[in-house]
Length: 566
Image (tube, rainbow, N blue to C red; front, side, top):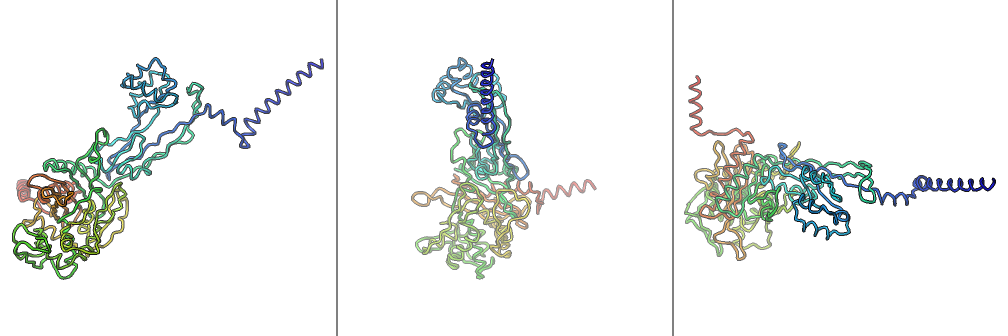
């Protein structure tokens, strides 16, 4: 009998030791930080999956969506389970993929446990495929970026890649702000890879932050339409239009042509994707004569009424002759700018010297970064030579030998519209207080230049086609030769117009650039000024600016209707 008790005692002791060891491994050693076996078990059965984070919405200043994320399902497979499946033909048909292509991909991923079948399928289509319950085929939820405004704001907003990371435009510049933080969930799989228990969310996803741009989509759409029409009509290579809020420095619209559709980028060329208004530089030409006028007025030797003799219609400095279209004779300084007289501006440049003109250009931000944060932003170029040739000094006053972007030129003209104060340019809508500005020229001189710019659009000026019905506007044309490998190209031009509206209380500043217009109407007054007129007319009405004058027929009709009512 004692042998039986001994055997039972030994068995119970062994059982107690076994239970004790299990408790030690599962509880005591885990509490002490020794979790090797538990970690090994988890590694063989516990799986983690990423929960995608919703990317922030990009809107215009009025809340209209420019970029939103929509839920999609990406289909993936376990090649080990799928490679020998008899249902491959069925899966290939469902994916609308040749069977040979599917088999080839499975061979490339042989021995792997993960392979994408298709990314970003529409949810109801992906669910139909998953409902077939083909072994080794799975789905995971993701987000795909969609751009409701399409090509209208594409080059400004940019786009994301297949992994929802910003790779161009605002999407890239503010990627960290927009992208959010993915979450994490855990589940247990068996040896065949099938989920047997969903543990749940370990870390919830944190969505990205929304971003409100300064542009007004209504004005953006208007400018897109007008620019496309102008570039097509002129047979031009490209074009850009940018409009600033004259008081705040906010970019109200920025368009370029040619364009692309960010929702379908197959076959898109790099040239279509550039935001030329920020990245491309041009010689601004005669649009800089208004800044040369500032240097003349600041010298104290000139007023807008000072007479300058432009006879006999040409002037020679060094090896170069500068002609006017005709002999204007003795005209005022204001008329020199109105007529864009080469002779008159040359005499100014000779009298003033290049230093004060260069200094005005620098103060107005020519050749300096705007710090918008936009990828690929160009600073332009304002040379600072130790030795200047006579022709280089004259060319500076004409806006040759320097480069600017359309946005940089708009910032310079905004100084005239804002009482001589320059404010930072912003691509984001300003929430509360205006950023601090810098007084770069006196309010009196800024007002005088505005008066001259208004005269440029008058009967004697070069920009009659820039006029806007009901409003007094001002601006300056520019027509420059394109630069080629051998120097300036005789029959290739860039047409520019920089303008302000309305002159008496400026609300908007707009710059138009038409690159390489064809035909006889290649000048700034013919190719660029009409675009300014069309977009400014729409902008002032969208902003609710009251007209300063009414066409006579409208006044007559209003009087007639009032008389009939009486």
